[in-house]
Length: 189
Image (cartoon, rainbow, N blue to C red; front, side, top):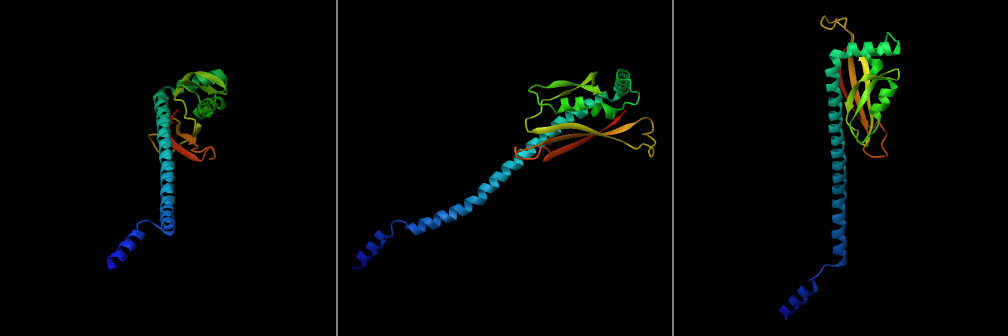
């Protein structure tokens, strides 16, 4: 008789009750929520670092060209001053010219040469730029003249801290400058 009761109880316990299934589903759903959040935030962080690496590439491309041109900046400025009739034209005027800045910001499918401009007049010297990724919203220069009165080795010319700025957005709902990277190079005019 005892064997029949044990066999009956084992037969009866061979499946899961609906309550057990619901409890198991609740536990699984509680565990999956944070896991999905973790994967999503990891993906966003990965995308952010990809764009930061791209910004470094874009900035080094521009900085290297500016450094190569630094020995010829006097000639470039002399040409720009003649073309515009403005003897006070500076490197800042060239690198922040509206036409030049708009060309830098433009999204093209191919790398291209962007000529320096002085008061909207294109010069014969260009920067070669890669096409911007579609998420990038800004590529620009900001310049600040360095005070060279305190150091003896800087007294032989005008020096500029050229800040190269890139802005991008990861999601279309982001502000155009929600992500930003800035790089500097020192140039002698």
